Image (cartoon, rainbow, N blue to C red):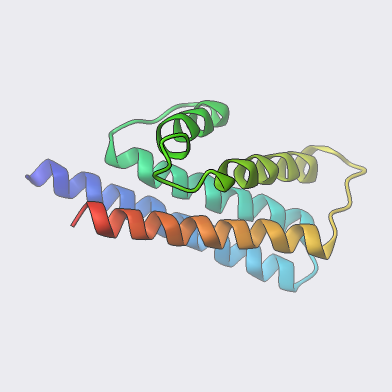
Length: 134
């Protein structure tokens, strides 16, 4: 039982980290720092996903493996809505462009979508944790 509580606490820690990243994304967005906002929005998504994986004691070193596992075990099984797969994939691409493409200039609208995706996923993950791991 004690180990189960620790797993839940660790998942909630990761979820809190996701919320902090989301706050950072919103602060950057409100300062017209869209490159940074896209980075932080993606990491909010990534840490929310890792919160779910913590519950099953699974983790990976590479982002692509984290995302693939989440898609296979949580999206394809419809624990989370299928549309989230596309939104997460888009956020990953936007983050990579924001971080590595010197010519990429994200718009207000594109950045706002990434933040909304992060908010949506965090809410879904929080609900999943609260409903399934009391």
